[in-house]
Amino acid sequence: MPYAEVFTALADPTRRHLFEALREQPMTVGELATNQPVSRPAVSQHLKVLESANLVSVEPQGNRRLYSIKRDGLDELKQYLESF
Amino acid sequence: MPYAEVFTALADPTRRHLFEALREQPMTVGELATNQPVSRPAVSQHLKVLESANLVSVEPQGNRRLYSIKRDGLDELKQYLESF
DNA sequence: CTTCTGCGTAAGGCATAACTTACGGTAAGT
DNA sequence: ACTTACCGTAAGTTATGCCTTACGCAGAAG
Image (cartoon, rainbow over all chains, first blue to last red; front, side, top):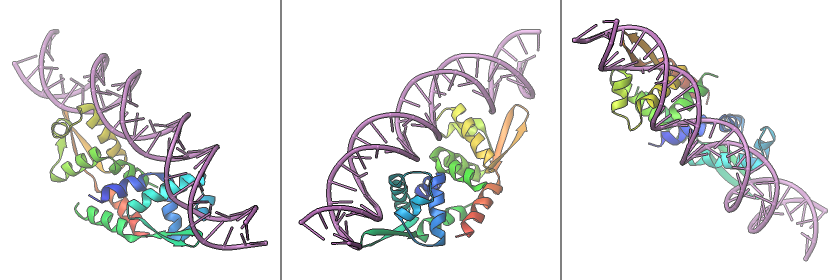
């Protein structure tokens, strides 16, 4: 049941904010952290959860890590909703 | 943001099981509790969360309370997913 | 009227999740 | 080469969520 991780990932408000921020454009961890009321390590931890839920993907660019939205997680969620 | 409550509601495995059980047919609290590894009060508390997320509805029938699936919560969730 | 059934709520314990600060490692800049 | 920037991870604290038992109330049953 992959959708389980998607639910728990998006159940947290901070993670939803991060996820929605990436809807605009891919961003680095630092950029994501500046618009959040939590520390940068906290953002890193949240991104890890989002990544394991197939909601975001990372692309290392030299020093930075560029995060972007990944559709797989949402697709799994949609598929689950279709069963109702 | 009504979808927020939907996420937190369906993030819990027990609540998902209850919700999926109601997919078959409307059931009372006692009936729902017999198929769950948790106590009946726990089921009541979970149903309360599901109800405030617009995922289930209740219809008191004399002594009992018959719970059934309510589509509103899922619709709000689907609508949220459409924004991506 | 008394008893039993079905259910919600309160209170408290306990596990987990989310946050912080501190640290280390790699790439970029000077 | 040294310093700075960017980020992940570890360790510890605090908050939150889920569970239990205990209790009380309304309707059904006798």
